[in-house]
Length: 202
Image 1: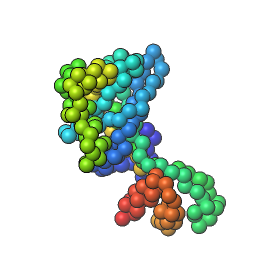
Image 2: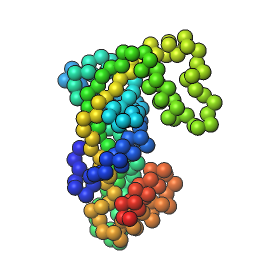
Image 3: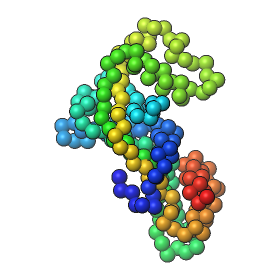
Image 4: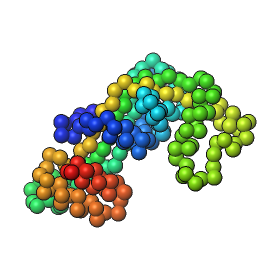
């Protein structure tokens, strides 16, 4: 990923935070010399050494994914930045965004217990704290059948790159103007980019 110095996320905890808060990723690998991708949730383990996920078993991407380096992209908030918000209109539009790239090797999960535990972790992560749903309550036969329909995997994290493009190449006054405009927008992405920008100025 092209990352100018001012946009590089250097704090590893911030990088992991993006992964955890925006865990629906795009996973790229190679198939017959061409890139292929699947959109799926990836969960960081407690030791922050691996990402866990699962493919639908009919998805052919998993069948030859073990012998290559893969790329998982985590898309954080992003939004359009209008020059009309600046003190002058003699400039061009841009796009502010946060993104993390993770590179690593895939190991397919063949142990059913490890697969089920990873599925339980996935559900518990995204279900509301007061939710009445739990995989623990599923009929064991139903859970076993569900397990046969997916191929679990884990990615050993070898390298991470984080980028937060937040108008750092503009003056503080201009950044503050952008923040004020974004805070008036109803979109969650624009609100989040405003929060990132404010945090960056502090």
